Image (tube, rainbow, N blue to C red; front, side, top):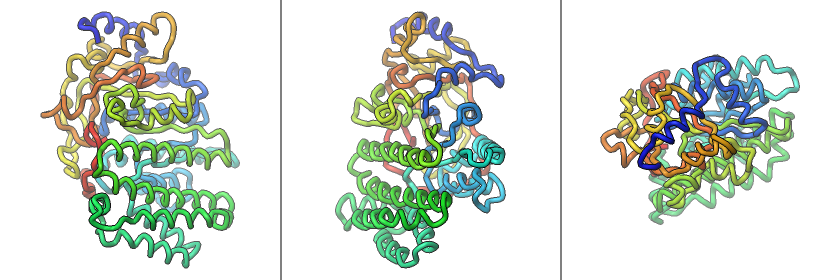
Length: 450
């Protein structure tokens, strides 16, 4: 940014579309999205109520008005698929709260909170009114941390449809038994060649499952095809998670890149599956800004990282629309140490020379900006926000005592996103409970815990 920010402040103030809490707040944003198939909705923290609330509002309108049928979130496949069964009316969970019961591990508040609960209830109600033969909206996860839960899902499926195949799967997945329940113990031992890896076993299991696709998927029409697809995705997750944990001690960049490529591969596989029944599938993705903003426009990209936003643009071109979020101050739900208790923490006012401070200095409480290249006045705005500046990212940990080093990076905002939503003062998400099962820290990259 130039030394004097007054011209940039004036450009932002003039271009800002105010958000006043009205029902039609996002009309112009939906117009900008147009007919795109993929809308990526970020967040600057993993624990801000207003970000979840805005994403839920936009998601409901995308489903109701533009025919979106897939909500794909930064969560593990088996936990999210339980929610999917509930919202589509194909399981035994009696409530949205119960359907979210798979999210037991740290950071539990990311998905067991009041905002997600409200969206899950809405999805169930919406789907109940969908005409027969029309596609219902689903809820899916794209992350890869559920190594053991996904193995259990594969075994449970095979126990039902092919007990002999289940016995072979147990023998293969039994390779992990000597490493306890902590996948990082496996990753350390295999990564440093202290023990043999389970790579061959998980690949063999996936290949056998894929060879049986026709037999398994044709047993009961659409239901059987959906169930086969979800178990194949669990087997793919096991394969990718094995590689992730085996490589995580070799370097943060390689594990980050593997994780984000897996996320995009999951999106592509899910959309291809859904397209077989009702094409074209339109999907909205929820994840941190660090995943959904184009990495090529960030300090992390300069270090060799890629991410979901970059890969979605590369794979789907102009069909992907990237929306970032930012805040200046307020409170956030976060922990002080991995696996530690959830806390409501005060978010420090944003640093000078950051995008967040620039937006704060406009004096506008809530607004969004269209960052797509354009002629006229907006072109000046886009060029001003292409100047390299600081951007904040708070993950599941917030460490204000090391704020600059832990939570800021350099970026070019108008290359990173197609639009950005700024809410100047925000508040912490409201969790459904304050406890969670401990999860060992992942060798994930800066910013902390995204």
